[in-house]
Image (tube, rainbow, N blue to C red; front, side):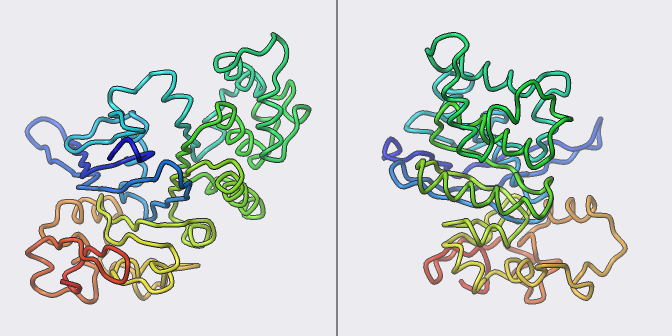
Length: 319
């Protein structure tokens, strides 16, 4: 039953209209996506893929920032659409955004975010902020490090950890972390990634981790969904999917780590936005235009998800 799950995303599609006037096209930014998180079994579930694959749109749909065109999203047995703006949902589901310098108003002291959040979600005496101190301690910061400081007076790593700490004040059950380490120095990324692992193991927080970085995804994830143009093309345990990827797109992503191979790039002189439009609107498999294993059926008919080796693969090769 849905009430036994923490989160159920069921066959969700989100359509956006692109263009103006009579020249309009519809793009399925998310196409028939489904997954679930267990209520009493915290995990880190990763959405991975290149830019424009629909990862962030899935996050916005779960947070209620966007409304699904079709399908449903249910949190603890209740449709997310009916929970938007409600205190318990805001308390329980917290976002962590990509750029910490956009999370905090540059004209507002960082500590004020913590104090405002704690006053709104607790009943402690005025002037006392034990939840703030606890949250800062979890991320390796102290109250003195943020006291009277504006965002510009903190490093990117400090500010991202502060962003995570602010999200923890409400004691959430689910964090949605959208590219949380892409804007901070490489030397600090592992400290944030390790923090997510500790939050899952020690605080029993489930995390939807959104990234294009397969290295950090492999290190912290329990399960992973590889996204391509709004679709899940391979879903399963992270070690199975990344050690032995089955979908040609997953294989290409793995082969591009740590840097893309110039020999495998798109051969046409084409901008990424043009490529995105082509693949989103392509008949058949979205990856057929770049796939070295594509055959005629791939260009004509969209593949189904097939169960292969304890994972789901959306590819005609496994029919």
